[in-house]
Image 1 (tube, helix red, strand yellow):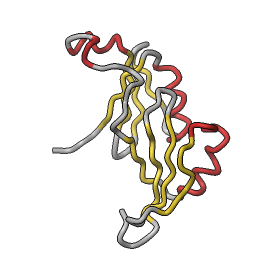
Image 2: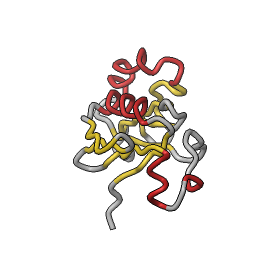
Image 3: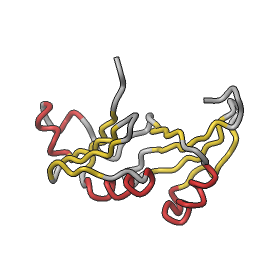
Length: 129
């Protein structure tokens, strides 16, 4: 089994597309007005409107902008450089500036336009990954 993607359901895909395109530097492929993907060599971020839920059985299956338990995590080359590059763009949505965690990762935590938590991290010790 290979985990390949995460799909974010949202009421308006345009702000999320622009946000993830900016913070990841990945180009977006817009398949329809209701569905887009950002692809890297190791993962896919899929962004779908609430209308796509009808294909899976109905809008009741997911509630946009209501995630309080999942953090999207990205291993980046230099979290401090990412912070300096994104701090103005992210503004008040940064909740943790680059900090070395006790398990050895240096990380920053912020929210996307729908309120989903995003963690950028760089291993700071040999034990971290």
